[in-house]
Amino acid sequence: MDRIIVAPHAGFCFGVKRAINIAERTSKENKGKRIWSIGPLIHNPQEVERLRKEGVEVLETEENIRPGDTVIIRSHGIPPNKEEEYVSKGLRVVDATCPYVKAVHQAVEKLVAEGYFVVILGEKNHPEVIGTLGYLKKAGGEGVVVETKEDLEKVKHLEKIGIVAQTTQNEQFFKEAVGELALWAKEVKVINTICNATSERQEDVYELAPKVDVMIIVGGKNSGNTRRLYEISRSLNPRSYHVETAQELDPAWFSGAETVGITAGASTPDWIIEEVKKRVEEIIG
Amino acid sequence: MDRIIVAPHAGFCFGVKRAINIAERTSKENKGKRIWSIGPLIHNPQEVERLRKEGVEVLETEENIRPGDTVIIRSHGIPPNKEEEYVSKGLRVVDATCPYVKAVHQAVEKLVAEGYFVVILGEKNHPEVIGTLGYLKKAGGEGVVVETKEDLEKVKHLEKIGIVAQTTQNEQFFKEAVGELALWAKEVKVINTICNATSERQEDVYELAPKVDVMIIVGGKNSGNTRRLYEISRSLNPRSYHVETAQELDPAWFSGAETVGITAGASTPDWIIEEVKKRVEEIIG
Image (tube, rainbow over all chains, first blue to last red; front, side):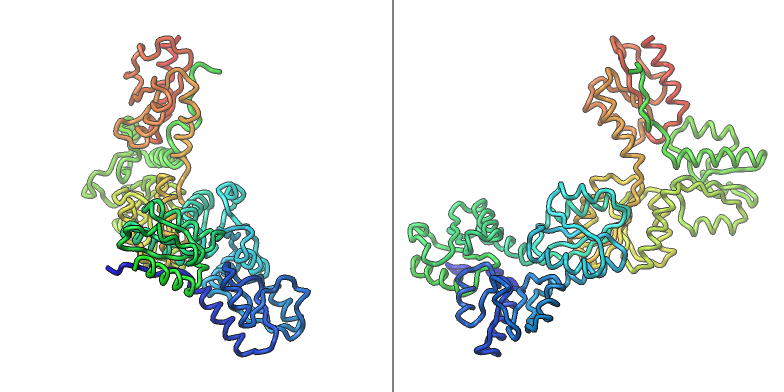
């Protein structure tokens, strides 16, 4: 067994990696032109700053854009009317929406076409869900976002319900909500649009944390999915630590440690994970 | 408040009442002819005996039937090939299948037509489920009966699952099974075929048992749904008693009782409930 083990699914998910690749390619192919990402491509300030240096600015206010500029739709997606608005303003739109999120949009369109009232199991204010609601509206369908058990009450009376989920939906809530709705409604059609990136990261921690002496979780202190990884790790191994960067690592944590596990939230870039790994190597020698 | 309160949903469900009415009408219209019910119309020996006196015998072995006889399909239903077999043997078939059970057959046919692998949440050896499996086979579909959590494992790998339930399925298991399947499969369509007779009877007990001094549950000692009513009642009121007939009532049970609640399992005929009520009236005066 190696002394330092990086979890197999640490860091960026498929959709985020893809969006960053698209942003980098767009930047290379459009040197000197103005390129904006519609909101930060990722919830990681260091990575956003790196992309800014490569020419991809974050669009803070739409007053800044001019015809001929390029805008990049990030992995979360946006409502289709917003995309049409950008095109009509003379912008070049590059779509880096995650294919798993596009699958949610298509599932909603299918359910509307089949006459279902659509329930989106997700967070009301999450950009992905706002985008999905745009596709629901464009398809001429009716639906609501269900975020809590209390929200479920609002759809209790419906007879025919189509269900999709935000790609990062918690599996336990998904199961409970689907079970309840299937019991209340006469007919329910569920298209499971949960992406397994979140559960894969959590399974890694369940696997790795009990086996190592010290466990390091890398990621933004404000990142929900990273904090959750830390909580799971701490419940399995008291010597678990959450850091944003390699600079935060305290040599005292590793006293007597033979093995160290490392994982990272879905918004942590590989280069930060690499820096943490190198610093741990230096400390434990 | 009356001193004796009979629960609003005590006794026979809609489908059983209807089947008995059909049997009685068939008997009146066919005086002197041979009439068989395919299995006992109801799990209550007293009621089966009463019907026998009206001319409806229970068919124990098919060797007993002759062309020209009438056979009554009870509320559970039978497989369609069995029905065709009876017709081809020159029998007159009277269908007393519960309309809620017919709805399960139709749901299965619909799911097969839409390309779903069908999961029937129910008891493998229950006559209703055996009937439903017959409709699945006739429709040319594939499917399985899922009775336990272990059975769920067998359908884990499937991508497109259609789900129906035995009409008397437990709601908790239904919710859990649907939630699990929706998480594993890409697409799940659920047609909720649970009849609310069982839950209505249970809700009556939750409502009534805590309010009365003594609670009497009437029904076969071998009736699963009656025993469940008794268990719920006893958990809410220690002065709960389970009897099959009025003769079992012990005056000592009612010492000092101001109020008595009565309910009955779904296979208990009204006339037995009435006898129990009268006997309680005599005892508490």
